[in-house]
Length: 90
Image (cartoon, rainbow, N blue to C red; front, side, top):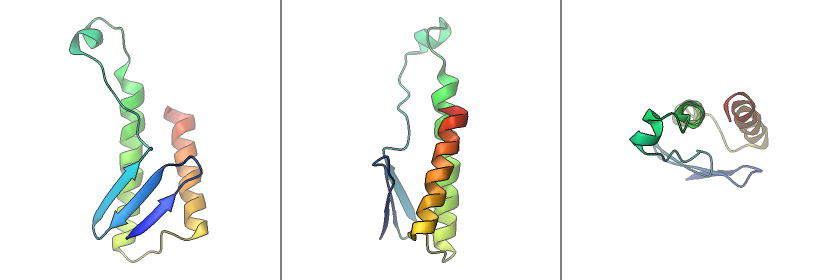
């Protein structure tokens, strides 16, 4: 199992072909009525979570291809990627 802890405290764990992250995604909770009435913008959190999903998919693919993803350099690259997602969508 590979575990990467980011400076934010978020964890990324890869075990075999399964990636589990904790603390990266935003919870999206609203009622259909809130959405219909325009009281909530579902796109921000959903777009952010979609970008995180893409990054997680890439990390899993790299791991499965044999790339060492738990090096300090790779962890730094993940930190920059998450920061860029937050700056653009968070």
